[in-house]
Amino acid sequence: MSEFWILCWEFFKTGLFAVGGGLATIPFLKEISVKYGWFTLEKLTTMIAVSESTPGPIGINMATYVGYETFGIPGAIGATLSLVAPSVIVICIIARMLDQFRNSSIVQGIFTGLRPAVVGFILAAVLSIFQIALFQIPVYQSTHNIADLFNWKAVILFVFLFALSRYKKDLHPVFLILAAAVSGIVFGF
Image (cartoon, rainbow, N blue to C red; front, side, top):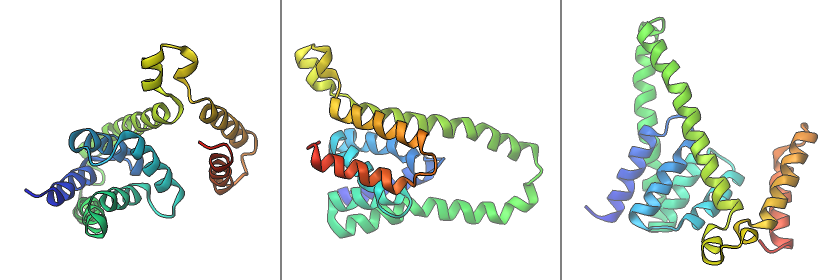
């Protein structure tokens, strides 16, 4: 099987099993990175930042970005369609059958079981991003200096923007994204 079709298959599986939305695709993308080496984990962090700050669903943005990075425009189209296809299929099936089974205890049990799984997927993705963005584990492993463990500029920016978002709850996320982008340029992240 050519690598292009492997890319499509991996994104089809991701679309089928990444229950909970775009952030739930991140563990799958991390696995793809390790398994195929098409991109590094550091590059994945950049892809996440770009996908989060561009219009549209993050999962689709990530598929398009990864596909483009690996196989150009055909890869972008293939990865995006492969990610979306399972959702379209499943939604069509569910929409057709949901009215019949809406009050079923089995269906209610499935949804009740999926909720904590979705939270777990999203939490795993957040922790992974947190680790990549704020820590410098390879640097720390080479120096064993605790001060080298943290990417101090990123930690300070994170704390500042987090506090700002909690203090000014009516502040639109676009302003936080722009502030992060400008900080990255000015302070040379």
